[in-house]
Length: 200
Image (cartoon, rainbow, N blue to C red; front, side, top):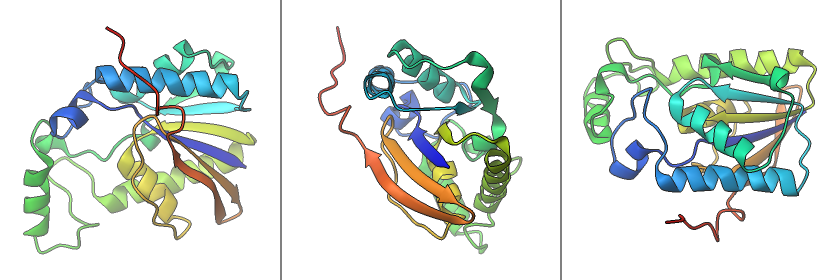
């Protein structure tokens, strides 16, 4: 099974340095980069049997821009799911990430176990990733595009014992998965973004 992975395009919160709300949208750069990814998928005629997209607004906007870039797929094979959404940091949304990490690091807990009130831990995200892995393995689809977030990508990779570099918004990565093994075919490929410019 081939799993193409993209992190949502740059969000307003990425650009301004705070933890995103669920309704936080893409920056102008994020919109352009997501469309460029759609253009690449269309131009290279990359075979995709199903798309799984996070339910958060910035991911949904990314998917919309990918379609505007020319990528096409049967709408019945597009699935929006909370399984691939970003870690929920609840009360820290809208605040600098440094505040969240300061509280986490002073909690005395293993960083992967820490969660703020109403939020999730990194291990909660890993459990979601495992559930998603089972879902796609049982789906019958051989070529999948996942539109997701940084923390999910990291935890999904950890299921295969991998710790890969953080991905750029709108970049494209490819894992080939068989049983419980994953092979990285390419990672954080931004070649389609290198000449992207924000139009006036």
